[in-house]
Length: 219
Length: 219
Image 1 (cartoon, chains in turn purple, cyan):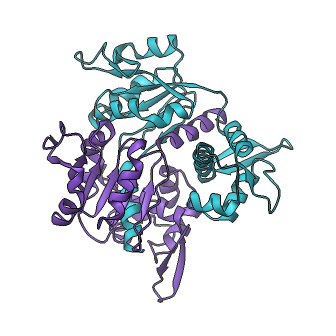
Image 2: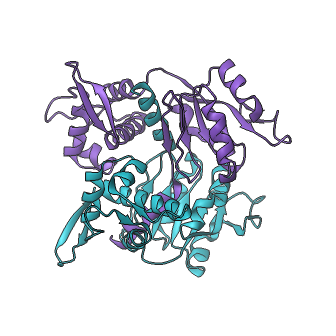
Image 3: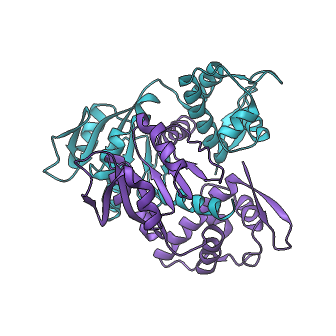
């Protein structure tokens, strides 16, 4: 997949999806460095921290303009700000989780989202025993009221954490909603059929174990 | 990061880390296609399913030999078997989870691991109220006995799901163990200092939200 953006000169430029993934990883790395008080990082250190090469770092960043001077390394605070501007349009996104089971509950409690500007404001489930309860500060609502509640509270992003058996039902609910983007944790690629484009990021946790086995085999 | 492997001719070949990530994604895609009864897939369909380009698919696979004939597409079963052989040395890996909190519990219940050949056989925690209980068929053990239990039951992989405050303690426990590989879910890059090399795959869930915001902004 490739993504079209306008370059600084106004031409359309194709950005590979893998570049966007790495840009997001660079930003998370900058956040960790900021927390540790690091001020300057070289492209080779950044590459080492994010499992890529210095050439790749420079190539990825070059899509979005000029970053730092040759030989001086990157100013961590400045690079973090620029990467944030590339990736996000706003300071805080409202997010909901569909499925208040073990995975949904774990996501609601995951500390990494809030510190990155993503606020979990609601969960949805079809289990009457769960509806009305809270996980952290987020209430669990009836999935029947998904459209109404997400529109009223201006929730833009949804994370999908239901069992695979609920896949088709939830797909329809999302297609009929005004949700702008979905992170899918069901180990099954999600494709939404809507007139308006709803970007989906599929997260496959088992893929990480495959990568690990490979690294062990070839270490 | 680049990984060295021996080519079929016996020369050392550098494989980019990103290629390994995509190979793992292709395998997960093959598993889904097998479940749906799909027999043949073209490189452009595979590329579309895994968010990359047909050229990239062909380049990634070319590191590992010949796959299919030009114009005929890939045989899903055969490609799945070959990819499995590339990524894994054995049919089943024994895996433990460190941290039996909400994330650890969700990982223990995640269906995608077992179907990919990764069997969660134990959890570890330091909370006396949790020790001795079970999640699914896996018992929760005292983290104090980590080395002894993982060696006795031949657990090779560990998933890290503890709060960030326990990071240093768990790091030491892993460094003193015989664990062969780690998946780290703490939003903080894990670096183990050991004489023997222990591969670590860091999983950052917030990175996925950054990618999603970008896709929404540029759709």
